Amino acid sequence: MSIHLSKLNRPEKGTLTLFSQHISNIIVYLACFYAIINLYSFKYEIPLPHIIRVAAVDIERNFPKLSPWGPGFDREILDEFGNYTDVKLLITPYPTHNKAFEALQKGKADLMLASGYNPENFKKFTSIKAGPVYEQSPALLLHNIRRFELRTPFELCDQTIFAPKHSGLIKTFKDLSDYLVCAPTLITSNDSNHLDPLLELNEDKNFRFHLVEAGAFKPLQPFLHKLRVTDNFGDDLEYRWYWRDDIQGLTEVTEDYWHLISTNGTLENKREIYFGFLPDETDFYDLYSLRKDIREKLPFYRKYILKAAKKYNIDPLLLAAVMYQESRFDPLARSKTGVRGLMQLTENTADLMGLTSRLDPEQSITGGAKYLRFLWDKLSSRDVDGWNRWLFTLAAYNQGLGHVYDAIEISGYLGKSSGTWRSLKQIFPLLTMPKYHSQTRYGYTRGYEGVDYVDSIRYYYYTMKGLAILPGLEAEYLAPFTVASPAVGP
Image 1 (cartoon, rainbow, N blue to C red):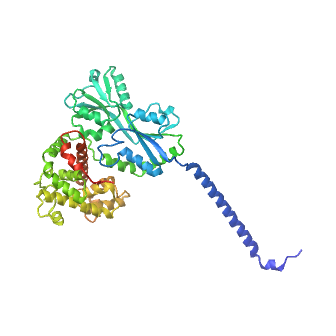
Image 2 (spheres, rainbow, N blue to C red):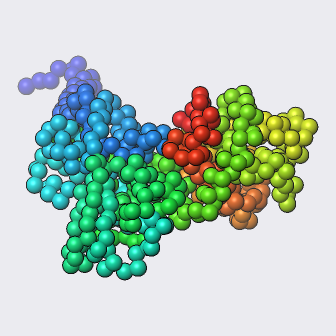
Image 3 (cartoon, one colour):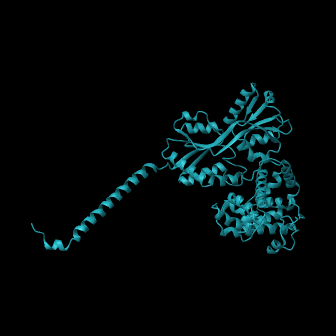
């Protein structure tokens, strides 16, 4: 047997053939792997329906009348879910939690906002799944200040108690009655809404006690000046979503969404915007003074506020809230730091805004509005928008724009989001410490004061917004400020 000489001289042909075979095998393996990944992804990326039907109980948190911050805390979470899933949400209001859950149970809704509602028997419905608890609040017992507060639980035995038609509150009442071994009388309204009946009961001393859910009551407390918390009862009521597990893809995408917003700060950032300004203890004397000053002092400055607000595109009530925080509507107000007038302007700021007198009400209001807009415009270079940008603006009005810039930079250094008020609220106080302010361009500032200042304005603004539309003496004085108010937030 002989071997051809040419094959001995060209051994590379066999090597190239072997190499080509290896490359072909690798390509085949990769193609198979890619196909498997695609099949796996197809299995778990199940397309959602084009429309998700949502059942939401008709309460302030879901369909707000008072909140200036947006569509409501719970509703805004839902709206972002719509954006996240790229589906249309069809939201239907229901008068009670039970009615909303019944719609979910019967397949008339795909998802429910169960604000404080905890059906005891939902587990028997295998097609319904419960989401994570994102808020807990107890049942509160209120008393009218024209009647004695609760001195002992057994005093309830011969009392009539009012409550909204809320299954969680009704269960709390039943458990309380069993504990007392007596039969207090419960009267419920026709729906789960807290606002309207509590406004009526605020003026009706015939009902001594009122059972409410804390999460619904706390945002309403500034408008219920004759009702006080006297005790709390029962297990905490839980805020969560319920949805149908038999809707293709809904469970997977909803669980992913809740994991995302629970870990990336979205949930806490929104909670801060909607509720972070509400005090732990309501100062009713402060609210009484605010109401009185709205009636007796604010009218003198109405035309100046409306004119300046229109010129600089600021909500007139926000401008009024800043003015109240600064001077309590006193045109001659003067602080120990030398700022003066209704808007408490420094001499440098007055010069920058072109004012000749800080004590002249029209000049002070116009200058303050102009300065707020100036600061807001300056923040355009930073990654902050919506209500966060306005809250940064208020902080800059109080502590100086440079210190706000410093706090934004420190937020970045510490790995926090630099564009949210929740983050700035945590960072601003650090500028009182040498460890932090020594590393900044503008140095020390009274960060705690800046945070309190902004939250006080938020509280006054929120209260004025509510008083402008709710029945009461203040409505006629505040209503003109609500006409054609620009959207200051997102």
